[in-house]
Image (tube, rainbow, N blue to C red; front, side, top):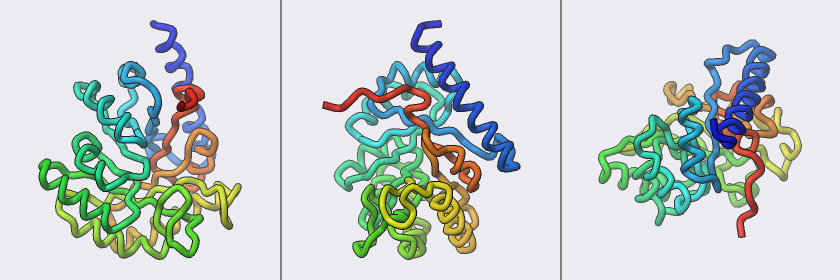
Length: 239
C-alpha cells in the first residue's frame, strides 16, 4: 500500500466509525446514510484510491476542477455530485459528468439544466439547496433558496424533462437564527423534507452535514453526508 492509500484508508475507517456510532446513537441502520467524499482541490489519483477503498459517491464544487477529474476517472464505478454554486454557463459541462446537482436554487438554473440534460440524453438527479440564513433577498450567503421558495422550485424541477427531483440539501448557516445551531438547522431541513415528500414522495434524499457536524446531521435524519477534510486531510490553500 502506498503512503497515501494507507492515509486515506485510515481516515475513511475513522469516518466510517463516526457514521456507524452516530447511526447507533440515533437508532438508525448504517445503511440509511450514504457517505459522499468531497474531493475538491485533490487530484484524480486520490479519487482512484478512494474508489479502490470502496467509495462510490464523490463530490466537487467547481466545474473547472471537476470536469477534467471526472474525465480522468470515467472508468471508475462512481456517482458524481456537484455541490457548489452553479453558473448557467457551466451547466453544459456539468451535465456531462454529474449524476446529481445538489445546488438547485433558482428557476433559470433548472431551465438550463433541463435543456442540457435533454441534449445529452441524460437524467440528472436534483436537490434543492435550502438557505436557512436567507434574508430579504430570498437567498443565502452560500447560495440556496429560502424555505418558502422550495415548493415552487420543486414543482419546476419535477416537471422538467431530463431532471429528477431527489430531495433537499443544506449547509449549516454561519449567520441568522441557526448560526452555531447545527442540530437545529438539520432538524429544520428534515421538517422541510417531510413537507416536500407530501407532494413529491420520491424526493427522499436529505443531504446535510460535513466533517465537523456529520453526527448532528445523522441524528436529525440526513440520508447523505458530505465529508472532505476528515477523509482527505486539510486542503491546500488556494492561491
